[in-house]
Length: 147
Image 1 (cartoon, one colour):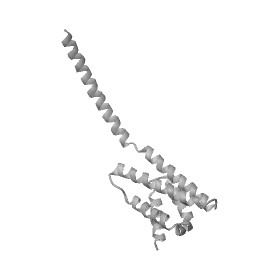
Image 2 (cartoon, one colour):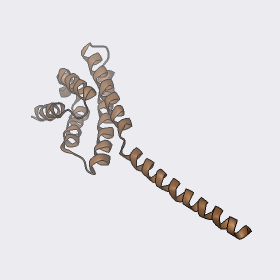
Image 3 (cartoon, helix red, strand yellow):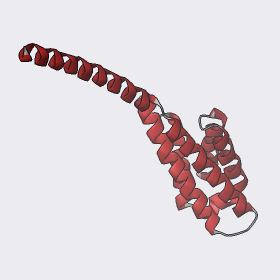
Image 4 (tube, helix red, strand yellow):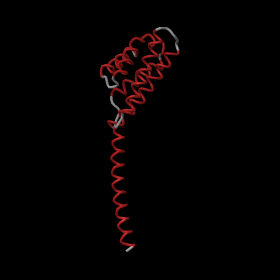
């Protein structure tokens, strides 16, 4: 009698474990596909860059340029992680951002003159991180700075 009951209990527990494993796998996969946290982090970085470059234009502090570049670098890192996780590879926008960041870091005297363009780009990216016109402006600004 005890063995029949223990077999039933084991069978029920095994079915429950398989069901729970299936639910866990489904929820894990759904969470892995949800990139809202990365997208909101990108928006936040772009907005902070916009804020720093705006303060630079107002002449508050030259450190705002460095902070703005740091925020754009953070945006780039998160955006690259986002595109790698969603598509499996980086896209051309990552290349454009990387090239512009090189200019921002190694030629600050040239890029500080383009603060209005940096403000426009960071504002556009804070509104929509996938805005293709913003990435076209990134590419144009990089080309202008490498002449």
